[in-house]
Image 1: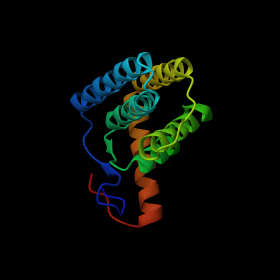
Image 2 (image 1 turned 90 degrees about the vertical axis):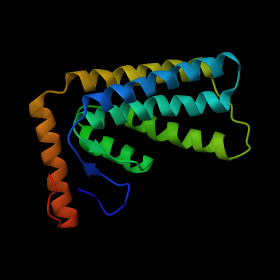
Image 3 (image 1 turned 60 degrees about the vertical axis):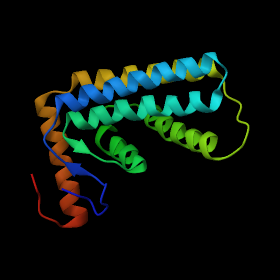
Length: 162
């Protein structure tokens, strides 16, 4: 199932190996954030913070068999599927983290960053999403996939590939 974009939302068979791989990527980004924060390199600490969050959300989506390679799409999908499970602040934090990464990575501006707060909030975010991932049951996964398929039919009128 592809939602209009070539790297848009696709429903595939869930892969525990990919879930584990994205969790490793998230943990590696956490380590990178810590190293950069320790050295006072705020722009890369901010970037690594975002990727730690993004990869743990991507692992959560992989758990239900959803793949999406467009960051804004992944964030919107996280909100759509998990708004009942994730506090609104968590979703907003992911959005703001992406904006902060873009600002610090692409624009030569000096951004004031409280590195200790960044580290703490990022670790809390990752832990919260990991708890969501660990708590997903087969029935919940089936419900989430069904919800996504219904959304697809309503908004795109295409047949299912799954």
